[in-house]
Structure formats: structure tokens, C-alpha cells
Length: 232
Image (tube, rainbow, N blue to C red; front, side, top):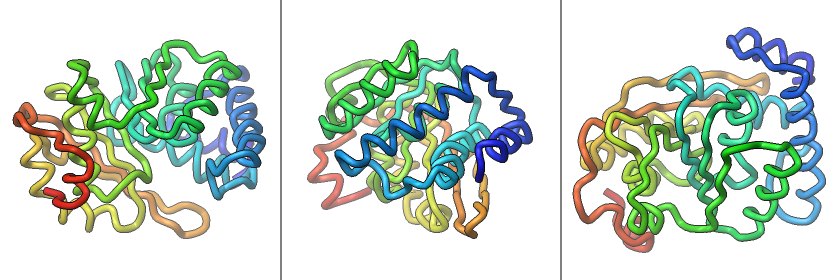
């Protein structure tokens, strides 16, 4: 996907990018390639693939939930999906939770270079943040972090009542949803929207949006070792 094709696809999605926003995406791609030589941020480094498999892929989240208010991105890695969403929807407030310090360093440089406002980066684990802070968000997103049974317990406690847990998955997304039904229900959510998109190489992207209809019961999230060993 060339930059021109990316812009056209965004237009098709109803996302209109200014010249300044286009430049932000250009700079993002350059920084991603540059920093990837120093640390393992992504296996995708070809510009066309960055635009399609990272940037456009992240923006597809707008199909299943309104990108507004405050978004918390769990395990954002190199900034996905929160930074592309922030560029495209500048009024969005973003909190990024990333446990690896070196990735946080990249994110700090990225936010500064792209001149992004209202972006907070926390070098922490999601389950610790959920226990230690009362802050809750109307959108909590995660992309390529963990199996949905595990991911649900990391993310849903951070979602405010009637907010959205947005899980970005690959071709096995609906299968993971079926397997995680007990976890999602126990933690207070229910599926409201799902969307499937096939990229140019034939790979499938499945985005799932869950509404938090009940408060998460006390005792969740548990410690990560227990979540991983005994997922709901």
C-alpha cells in the first residue's frame, strides 16, 4: 500500500487527513524503521507494509467503536493502535501502558517528534495499573498482546462502565472470542460489534468491541502469573 493508496483508503473510511497529519504518518514510518535498527519493535519495515499492516490496520478500529474521549492502549509496543488513532483523531486523549522500558523510550521520542498532545506513557503492567489506580477509560485497546482469555483480564478492569474493550485480532479472532466467553462475561462485558477485513496479502484482521455492562467483580485482575497459569 503506497502512501497515496493509504490516503485514498482513509478517505473511503471517512477519515480525512490534513497535510500535517500525512506528514506525521511519514515521520512515524521513518522513526519506526530508524529505531528498529536499535531494538526489536516490528518485523514489518517495508514502507508499503507499514502503511497497510500497521497504520491502516490500526485505523480500522473506528469501524467498531467511536474513537473519542480517553483511550488506554495496553501493551502498545511501537504505539499500535493508539498513535495512529491519535494522529487521525487529534482530540483523543491517550494513555499507553507498556511494560518494556526501552519501548517506552521510543514512544517518548515518537510523541515528542510528532508533537502529539495529551499522550501519557506508563512504564508498567496493565494489571498493576488497574489495582493501583482508580482511573478508568471509555476505550481500552490491545493489539497482538495475548490470547483473549488472558487479555480480557488485563484490559476489562480498566474499562469504565458502558465503555468499550477493543480487541484487535488476526484470523482466529472469532475462535478466541468463543473460547473467552466465560472470561468476558465474568469480568462484566458483552460483545457489541465485530468486523473482519482482508488485507492485500490475504491476511485477515478481526476487530472485536465489547461493552462493559457490569462492574468487574472484586479480586480482578489477579497477578499476571495466575492469569497466565489459570485463565478464566
